[in-house]
Image: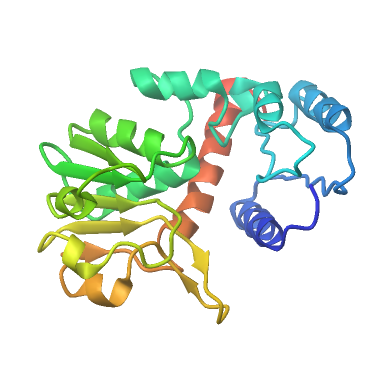
Length: 245
């Protein structure tokens, strides 16, 4: 909904990924003044549409739309963003169909890099429902020892410096410096921020962190593409769950 430039870029990337994978997709670019009832009616229609396996509403939505009501309106079996409370609860107990795309992408990066989470000290900086909380649960399910840090955490650098695996998802440009990182740690930067000079950067100050980390993801080009890839994976999974084609 609306004309948010970042949202338009994300949606284009998702459309392109669908084309590359051979996944049929439909886009509904709704004007900002669209009412909540109109949006809910569209979601209801897509919930019932048998040839649609997955539904997502690109966030953020305009101020007059209640985000929770919109997310709750999506059929949990078609909720490929995994934001619905039913799917969030399933992640908590470890019996899930879908995982939010960014945390899922982080876990895939860890797995494909041959990094064993078992017994590792894992620190997640950020406690959002979209990244921080589910990320912590996935690391816990992989037998990591998990600490969640946030804006009220005291002695943050002390916590991050103890991490074998550090996931930065705080939404502040270059927030994590090299001197906050343990020698040889795995550093995964979920943040994507645009500076005044229009350049993109993450939540980790890459130049200083790279000198200390054993492995580190860049921004852009690190977690971002994985997020889109996991959306495609969730959509295929939804087709199986729903029995759609």
